[in-house]
Image 1 (cartoon, helix red, strand yellow):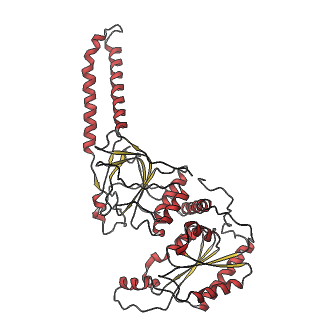
Image 2 (cartoon, rainbow, N blue to C red):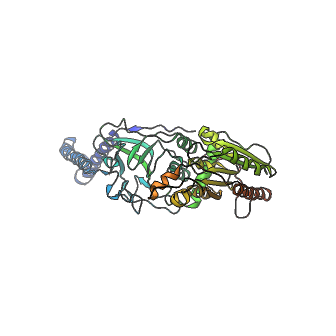
Image 3 (cartoon, one colour):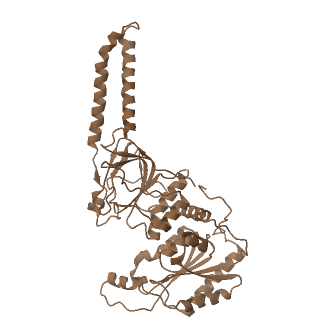
Length: 459
């Protein structure tokens, strides 16, 4: 794994560039004047009268540079004009700059570029409690703002409406960077800069950071503590501020293919030699919120149905006591995942393609939780899995509140009951489908299980 080290370049580099340009301009002027106005034998003393002109040109260049520096205008990183609808047709993060759109890709910003007229992105960005107190500007590389620190190499910059600790929200925030890494010759950043509502964040969840390190490389998160009083400017930076945004289906599949392959390699997981027709059924339990009230009864149902199918192996695990690589190994060895709705289900893309998911919800979710309850259906589709449906508990303590928000809070973390007959029939149906798939191979409309001996993209 290649380690990319953060580098901070002094603003002396632009000064040297200006000095060189000044000297070159003066020399060129001297040669031209010699060729046009003077004989080759003119005395050196005659050229001494040109030095005031050279000096004046140098002063003009410095004056122009100073004017450009003074003209740099910093705007609030979070535009409060869009606070009521920050994700509806606009963005409150760097609101004055339009996204770059490419077919099938997440919309992004890149600096420097033709869109920025070659200018670099500069930030005052260390405020962690109010994004409107952070600010941004564009500046010419030869005329960076006073006291600026130039951060060398490529920077990955993210702004998310959610956060980097919930693994589902973090996953969708980092996936466009994995896509960029994949399609830009496996380029890796020198640093990450993370924002939430324009507020600086300096940590990811351990699960997310390990996923990024496995997929792209070492993660260095910028905190701007060593930048002094001036702004930070970026030699090169790509910014994603809509998570996956407009990323197309094909690109999403490629991203999850890469992350599946790279994490298995990172965790030293290879396919064990065994029965290719074996069906691996895994119940991933939660503790506390959205756990089953009667776990032993639920386990017995799934164990019994698995026992009715030749080659079925049943496994029970808990999400709260597994390391990252434990989770990758568990899901890599799973064909059918059974789990209550929750962040632990973000692990589902570690399974082979065409694996199956069965999802469970407490009472009240179907009516109150909105589209967000379907995020793992979406993830299953992006990663080419088969979401086999959901069960919503019809029983539970009734909500006595009059408003939907309070009732959703009432039901959100409730425990789940079970329906023995429904669970048994549903499980039998899915097991038979998977058995048929394993016996006959992939149909013409689906791809076969992903071979694990194939080298990973960007390996």
